[in-house]
Length: 542
Image (cartoon, rainbow, N blue to C red; front, side, top):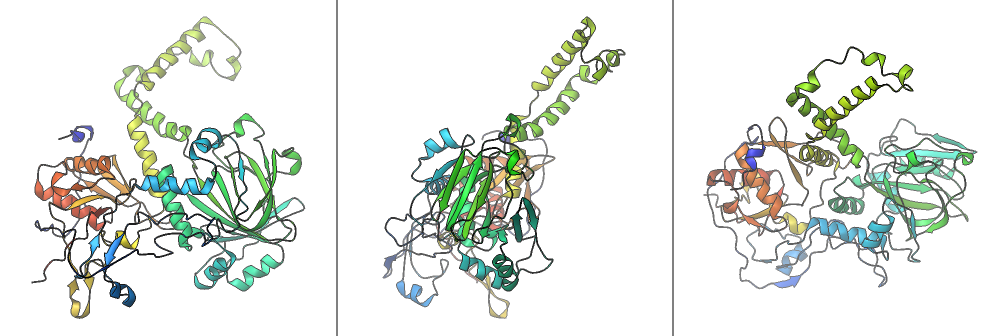
């Protein structure tokens, strides 16, 4: 057994109630019955189809889509249930969620290659991709989608939507304190105001799918804002952001001017800028018109401004990532912890300051060099070396990953994935208080994580599993959930993490006790963190 438990300090208990069931043979791969080969295609849940045009590629074949053979009568009647007793042939999910995220990136930046983009463009300079394919991003967001969202969802000003203007160098926000109903929103729009949607992925499933899949590649929260600008107007002042920005134009056109960072300390900044005036930013390095189907990328720190032209409106979505995801953010977590460790283990750091330190340092003495000042300086540097030797790199990286779990969007689970997860139709309450379609995990059940980055095991005051499957679609919309597990269960979690994307039988989890193997598998199953290789067999209700 891999001794990961030796790395961890303190025990905890699994916060899980309910029984752990006994071993039961899992559903087999094939059952004989007349069936026809079909592919399930849920346009909103399983895939994003960009267009029927031959020159428009598919965005993604759904999250981990696979084939299934079923009775076509069930499809026609809408009664198909993966956990029903109807026979079917199931092809297990075998793809890697990080590779699915890479496919999204390839699609977004095509025809630029990923290697070229990451090595020559990413965090270095802007790039404009003009395609002359107006339908390329069309399925992500449209003006009719926005109108429908305003009519069917409880969209609130400031929380979900901003009304903005930028006229004669003055940037203003015009949000009333109310629900954003269409007549009011469109009245602002017709009077020259821009509309900013702050979390469109909450209400538009294609954006949710894109962002939730892309974040698996970047290991960073991927967000979205959408901007609808009326003809011949501008909604925002020149500024730079603290995120990597992909501007995907879906309707109309907009003229963009992009400017290099003004100073070295504005290259890859960690906070967004103020609103600039034109005389503060100089001449643009890039002056282009973004048309429907085009993409513009620029790194954080590049000042930008966009204005609609030629009597056309503009609708684009900004896909963003890498906010507070730099080496500096890692060091901010690492250095205070290293200092505390060094203090605990080095009495020199706990000794009192020299009596004469105030006579040699400070603004009054900053230009004075004396042998005593150099002696104290050398002492400080030697003590700082002791701090460097205590850098808790693993712990700091875990804390960064914990932040990702807090920020991340919940995954989009396809219909086929529901057949092998808790998100399917298992344990259904029917008439007379009866629960049907009950299933159980056995030792020979083969399992894997729902997504590569679906959880993070962190050693704090105890061992915790942080996960994001229950996160809100709004950014940090709820508290970060976690499970506390016993120290001796940590190797089983490590087995699942390191084995992904392969399946592992419950029996082969790195634990000595079969009961605990079933227990940890059941905990992960009921929280929606794992999938089984094949649908679980229903338990007899007798």
